[in-house]
Image 1 (cartoon, helix red, strand yellow):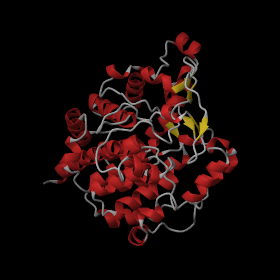
Image 2 (cartoon, helix red, strand yellow):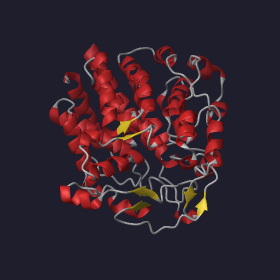
Image 3 (spheres, one colour):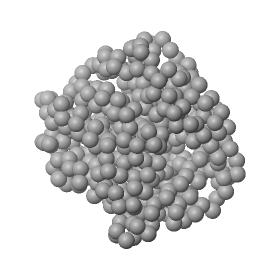
Image 4 (spheres, one colour):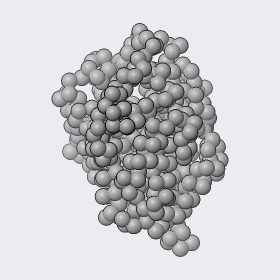
Length: 423
């Protein structure tokens, strides 16, 4: 196989890893208690599964969305991105009718009564992908349509996709209720008349903007870029369209060149360990971070300066990935050393650890990530890209995806476009 064909195959395999990882993790998304996860999935996730009801820890119900409806209507801009799922949210155009009467012990956030704790991905089927994966497909299609990446083309497709009711969306209808905070804040800004390229909110203002969800699409673009130098620019600039996060950009500075090295055939374990030396681990352990969250009644109760300190105080020591993977068991690392929440200063070293611990073998590593819980879905898409670029994703994980036939066509078209994509 020549170098060009090998690169195309590795791009395809990385994308299969992304979609497979997403669907495997989906039913256990945002389980922080590993005891709850093991109980609800008969010892743990073993393959594609549907999300259960109720989700014992879910706090999707009551998340807010406050677009400026009057201004949006005057400007002719769409603002409804929740559609049939609006009943789960406290929206400016549809107040929440489900009461938040309890407080969940794992994270401290207010929640609905147990029978109304709807899973974040309520209604999805086994092997079905989330909205985050749907937006990867939007990016892929925009590149295929133009033969290159264009910001305006992506933003137009992004707005159209989010503002179109689920069953009518192309590519891939969205049936997923979970709409991340960055999306809600982006469209709140859009509804006020802010230009699309400037609608992303800032991590320093809204902490959860700095999350794994901001890494996924930039890495897909980096994978398709014509060279390593321009890959960095594409990834970082695309990130800034929807997220403004120092923590995310730090993570991308390591992940983008690592992903491209793997896609070019580098040996995965040694290569990942070499890039991991550029990472600095958080001083606050996962155990201590969760203790702080619970002590403040959820992360929203932590003063901004303290929140910044918790997430940006890093060790000065080099991250020795090989030693951690070799010497430390998962029950010590997951939750205790690294939090499983959405923050990349914990999640990136965790996903690299899981990849190395399982020798970059796709199925064992992706299942380990699914069973680690927390923000396993968005971690999984990053992990799947890395592992898929290094090793073939098993056929049954591809064909087990609910939309695998359409995905196969889209992945083929995108990988073809990527081989000739210029700037």
